[in-house]
Image 1 (cartoon, rainbow, N blue to C red):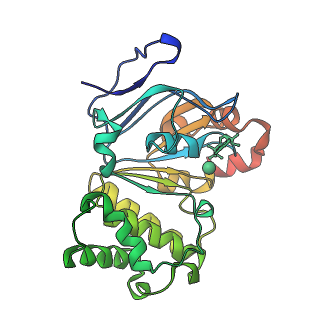
Image 2 (cartoon, helix red, strand yellow):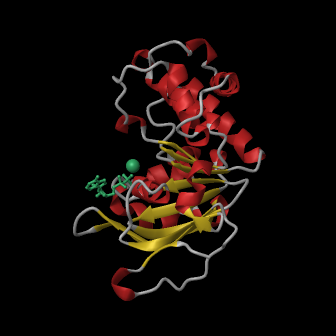
Length: 264
Ligand code: ADP
Ligand code: MG
């Protein structure tokens, strides 16, 4: 079996891997400059579970997702997607990027943004069919945005834009969903709409991984947590790993104890 194995300086990654997991990461190191943004991280994500990736600003949370998607190239490490190399399974992974990282002035209709989620399965030469349009409209309905299909994406509120990006992920009919701060800067109604869609995905046996900034909602929303601050701090169920010592280790002095007390 060939895997995305990049050995740094001749070292082979020897840790065992859970071959059937939707996403298994071993010994991942990513660096943009001299200092690694993610260092020697192991992580495994399972079907039917929602995991929050938490850690302070600059901890490498977005970088971890981008490496899992092949958007950034690791210095070393192994990424296995259902036991296969990332490239062959990429179409089964949906990604909702951080809203702030998207150029919203690009003139595009909402429905076209959602249909972009289907391009990988469409292939280059196939025509968009009525069935694809229906899936896109159904996806918009699931996030309560069906009446906005013909609007320009730039005219929407932040919460509406975030719902459209979730609809795009849904239209892809993926099995693994990677979301980068899906609740950041959205209104309460959007937060409710997004969490209920994610819970539906989990109930359908999909794997959901979200970078999450609001510690107070972790126990309510998520099954598992993955704490990172460049290196992996802790990983486990909310009861096991979402603890005061782990949060202290991840956030250090940057998080007031009172804030942590409210969250756990
Ligand atoms: P988080 O999502 O946890 O806030 P990031 O993964 O965005 O963290 O960033 C981790 C580190 O990598 C930070 O120090 C950040 O400044 C740096 N970084 C992120 N993206 C880039 C980039 N494109 N070029 C250079 N440095 C980057
Ligand atoms: Mg980030």
